[in-house]
Structure formats: C-alpha cells, structure tokens
Amino acid sequence: MQDICQRIERAYQLFFKHHKKGVRPPGFKKVRKYKSFTLKQAGYKFLGGNRVKIGSKVYQYWNSREIEGKVKTLTIKRTTLGELFMVVVVDNIIDPEVKSETSRIAGFDFGLKMFLTVSDDTKIASPLFFKQSLTAIKKASRQHSQKKKGSANRERARKNLVRRHEDVVNRRYDWFWKLAADLTDRFDVLCFETLNLKGMQRLWGRKISDLAFAEFLQILEWVAQKKNKQVVFIDPWYPSSKTCSNCGHILKELDLSIRQWRCPSCQSVNGRDENAARNIRTVGASTVKLGNVRQALPAIAV
Ligand SMILES: [Zn+2]
Image (cartoon, rainbow, N blue to C red; front, side, top):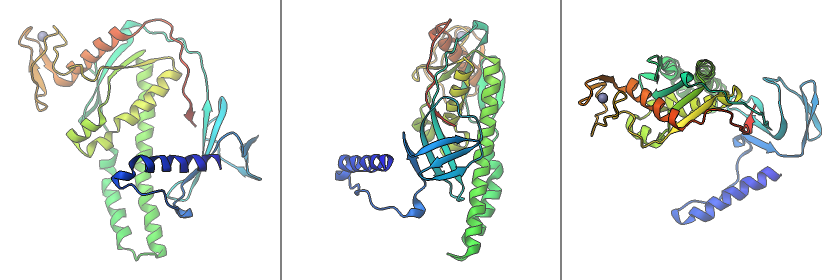
C-alpha cells in the first residue's frame, strides 16, 4: 500500500509539473503490465531456510547470495518471461581501510574498439556481445513477427526472443564482474573520466548501449568499495586527449579521427588513447588522499 501510494504520488507530481507540455494524468494499468511491487518495513518476514512470508503465505526461494546487513525493502519483480525475482535492499556499513600505494594507481580511457586503455599500456578489448548475438536475435525476431497474433506459437516465439536478449545482458554482466574483480586486484586507485553519456550517444550512436560504460562503472565502484580500493573521477572538462602526457603541452585541436600525434614541443609520439589514460592517471593521482578513508557502503540490491 505504502509503495503504491508513493508511486501514484510520484506520477501525479510529474503530471502537475509537466501538464502544460501535454503530459496526461496517470491512468490505470493492466495487471499484466504490472511488473513489480515493493514492500517497505512491513508485510514480509524471512523465516530462514530460504523461506519468506509475504502477507499470509509462505514462499520458498532460491538464494543467489547471502543477505548481509539490515533488510530495508523487499521488491518482487516479474520478468517478461513470467519468472519471479525477489530483490532485497540492505543497509550494510563496513569500515574499509583504504590502502593505496602510488605504484598501484592507474588511469583508464574508454573507447569504441578498445573497451579500456590502461595507463600501463595494456588494453582491454570490448567483446561486442550484442553483435555476436545479433544474428540469433534477428532470427528470433523474424520468427516472432511471422506467427499469428494471439496464438500460442507467437507467445512461444516471444519468449524465445526475450531469452535471446537476456543472453546478451547476462553475458555482458558476467564479463563486467570478472573485469572489475581483475582490475581491483591489479590496482588500488582507479581513475576515470567523468562520463558524458548524452554527448557520447550523440557522437557514437547506438553502439554505446553495447558497451555500456556506465553499467560497468557502477559494478566497478561496488567491487572497489568491497575490496577497499578507490575509484576516482576526474573533471570532465580536463583535455585528456589533447595534453601531451610527456611534457604537458596542450594542443589547440585534435580531430577524433587522429589516432596518433607527435608533440610539437617535446617530439614524443602519443597514441591517442594511451596518452589520455596516462593523463587521467596523473590528474586522478593528484586528487587522491593517500591513507585511510572511512566510507559507508550505499544500500545495494542483492
Ligand atoms: Zn610533449
């Protein structure tokens, strides 16, 4: 009840704010379209043995990972496949002692061909999961559209199509978690440029959703906090590509197509991405306070 009231409240506030722009008041939603509901303090109880009481009924669930900390909310989600998931948000405060050594600071530059260029001259190529699975998705999509509307065959084809999309998402997440674990093993402080997602979308178009930098950063920040490592974001206006990482000379202009340039001041040859990664490392390192930093972990869903 509490959550539904808040959702309606939110919807009405948006309507009051934007109704002059033609936004319609919130309407009724079909049960079929209802994808989730959230329980706050009351209405559920964890019984142990992977059982939870919701309302007056007891449900058994499969536990994907231990629930650590104080439970804040419980959300039940239904996917497009009709599967039910339980999302638990917990408040978990750990006392990390951030240990950082200057030798273990790295700068990272996101790119299209190379997912990440690291300041120590290593590169991490982007597996374009979506591209790999595109043929399968196209086929599934074609089969779906050929089936008669409302038929059982069409429903089966729809589920097949949803599963193909889910495959991509799952594989991408798996890769992100593994990469985040690897990078936080190798480095103590990880420096990135602040993402300008709207700008990148304009620049690169659809492919950006394929690479999903923002998603990766979210995972990385979480893993880093858990392992007492730091993720640092530098000023988005810092000219990381145009500055020579060797002598600090700043170019007036650098076209996106130029992959390599010779510094007019010190004559060193700079690879575009490698140079940017090194600059991001330098700027990031200058903002880091080395020593112990106490941080509270934000609430996250398990
Ligand atoms: Zn130079």
